[in-house]
Image (cartoon, rainbow, N blue to C red; front, top):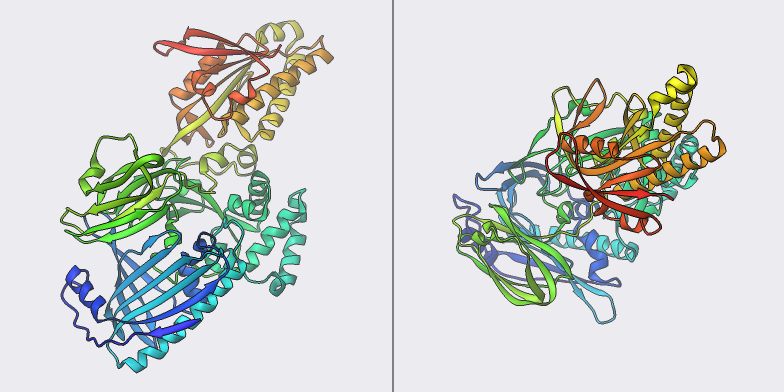
Amino acid sequence: MHTDVASCEGVSVRPEDLRSLAYVESMRQQARTATSTIRLKHRPEELWPFVSNTDMVNAQTAMPQVQITARPTGVGGSELTVQSTEMGLPIRYEELPYEWNAPEKLLVERLFEQGPVAYYCFASELKPLSDGGTEAVISVSVVSKLPWFLIRGRLQMILERMANVYKKMDSRAGRPASLGVEAFLDEPANHRDAITRLESRWSSLSQNPRIARCLAEYIYTAPDRYVRKLRPFELAEFYQLDPMETLQFCLKATKTGFLNLSWDLICPGCQGSKAEASSLSEVNPDAHCEFCDLDFSVSLDQNFELTFHPVLTVRSFIDAPFCAGSPSNTSHFVMQKNLWSGQTEGFRLLLGPGRYRFRTSAINGWRDFEIHSEGKDRLTLEPEDLMTLERDPAKLAYGCRLTFKNTSPHFQTLRIENLSWRSQRVSAALVSTLQEFRDSFSSEVLRPGIQLSVSNLTVMFSDLKDSTRMYEARGDAAAFSLVHDHFEIMQALIREYQGAVVKTIGDAVMAVFQDPAKALACALKIQETFQQRNQQEPERPIILKLGLHRGSSIALNLNQRLDYFGSTINKAARIQSESIGEDIVLSDEMLSADGVSELLTDYQLEPFEKNLKGLSGQNKLYRLLLS
């Protein structure tokens, strides 16, 4: 490690507006800088998930916890005031939005109203080396209100601690980071007895013993803030477990009193949790993000997630931040840059192939672009360009020179969002379409009168063919026994394919799925199962009619049960009525869904058009014949 302290004189005089460009530039010019250089063995992209987690880096560096207040600017975004302590003194500062360009640079500037310094800037740069390693350069710049010799030792101590944290991160890097906290986990050996006890108490919750072991290990080795938000799919990816088995395990652990669940409303801008409820009945369908200064409505499948946390008798934790605006909190943004009114900045877009989006904090608009081999090598962008109605993505080349001119009268934070960013979250829509959830948490319903949208729901309707004749021919008792047997077979298969029975209506079943491919696979299995049964019991046949459709819907509380309604539900019921028995009728929307066509290669499809009762126009449908 090499440390260098630059020498320059400076004084601090706080103007009326801390955030003015003139004041910030004055502070930059006066600042003294301490720098540390560290040689690391892993590549920048392998280190970035941990380096960008400045909340955990600060915690590991023994920085004090912070209290954050967000004030809406009135033109989009917010200003952050942070309170904490430094050198035993109370401090208060305005924090400008972090700036970064993944996976190589990050920077944050703080403008102090109270404390021993007037200005503080932390910067980290990861420089790739030819041998596959990284040269990390970390620096702290300050304008001190105290004599320099009192501040210098503190800065050198911070850099030394941070260098040790970087080395620790480097020692644990090298595998894909699904959590962004892997480098900060404690050693399991330090908690061996607690892990073993919890694993033993959980042994009956899953046939896969690794799930109990891995989740117990995580609960006792993860930092407090990450134990507060257990995401089953993230944990499954990290420990290489089956995602649905892990989710089902968490539901059982909640039912048996080891975990609590939380319904979290997610801001569509920053992707942060902005409201929590311990029950669906407490959910408010409208929310506000104070950091984005954004009002938004809740969608069951787009910004409403289910998380878990251990009960206090399993592990206690304190959810306190060490950083106001850690880049890891918004990892879907690959770049963020601040520009004052009238400023122009140029950047190289060193982004991989994919689709991205330009956004700013003060403009409620966006502009999509793709990195393309035949794209433009230069682009000039102004805030008004983000309000265009042109939604075809611009094609830009790798390394394209972007020039952004902030022609607006307001401070702007330019952001580049990775639209292929994948969040490993359990949506409320998914969990509410699982039979295990509906069976074990039947009291989890929305408050009467509350309706939440579902943008994509797959609906299955079934009915028995000639059921009236069956009751007349066999008598009520014998016919009811057949109907009951058919319901049990249906429910078991729907559960197996990660769906849920919403209700039965006479002899009919309404079921819902989040995955249209699983819904079709379930329908195929249902018809194959009943065909085999009918061959074995030809004197007691059960002929089933099935229809599948997908689309948007509304979730609501109906008779203390989570139910769905809307045109998608009506159309799915009408599609089922076109079934003739031992077949499956599919809508055009089902046929175009991801993963569906791959299931149809061995089956015959008969397209037809039909006017469905109560629905306008001709509807293109497909009859799938099993034999």
